[in-house]
Every structure is written in structure tokens, then in C-alpha cells.
Length: 95
Image (cartoon, rainbow, N blue to C red):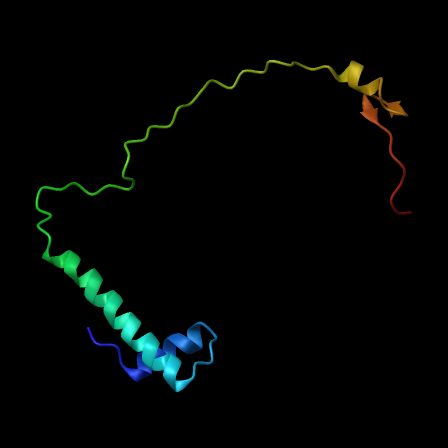
């Protein structure tokens, strides 16, 4: 695949970049080099290779969700300056 000047202009618009002519020429060469490098992957024989989403075989390690600290509401409310009906009383933020 060849990179054209129109492609560089379009990518510049998408990236919201204003490139000089020299920068456009350098970007065109860099993009062509990248595509050539990626194109080498097509030369690899991938028959029999299973697709994978990660290079390591990772399994989620799940634990059972067990409450360990329990409901200690009464002790927490002892620290409150004011409490009512098992809840903190705070100043009004608006009328």
C-alpha cells in the first residue's frame, strides 16, 4: 500500500495537525516504512496457530465476597457530632 499526499493531508486533518511540506514528506516516508514492516507479518506461516487475546495464559482469580467487618454503625455514630435515626446529621447546603 502506498501513502499518498492526500492520505497525509487527511490524517493531518483528523489529528488536527498543521504540517509543513517537510513534515508531510517525513510523515509520508515514516508511514510507508511502518506499513512495509507490518506487511512482513503476512509472510509468516500462521497455520495451526490459535488466536489469543494475551501472551500469557491468565485466569481470573476470584474469591468469595465475604463481609469481615460487619455492621458497626453504632460505634461509627459515636464519632459523629450529631446523629439522628441511625444517620449522620449534617448542615443544610441550601434552603
